[in-house]
Image (cartoon, rainbow, N blue to C red; front, side):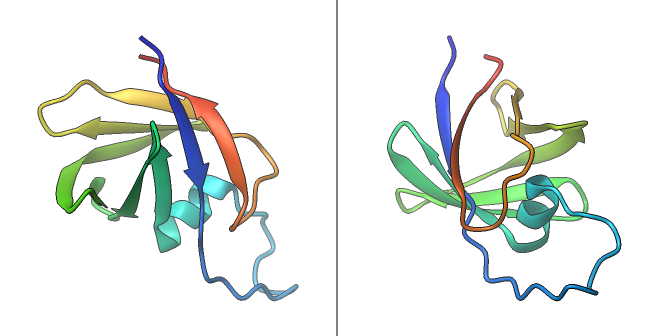
Length: 104
């Protein structure tokens, strides 16, 4: 079964033209600052830790698991659930809303 995931990456980022020589992807921004992910109408505030773990708070419940990056895809493996991967569209910036499909 495929789920449509609606990602609203909401970040407070101050951009400086000389800050980075390399362009960041939306995955880079999400990993750095966290994200708000809406799944089937429910928003989750997610924080992605450097050790490959994450926490997401939705409906007053804390969810945990692991994450990994696979090229332009971002994969999450919730504790006691199946891993899902979604391609993130190129050219997205903090504050943009976009839709993507998971591979399950």
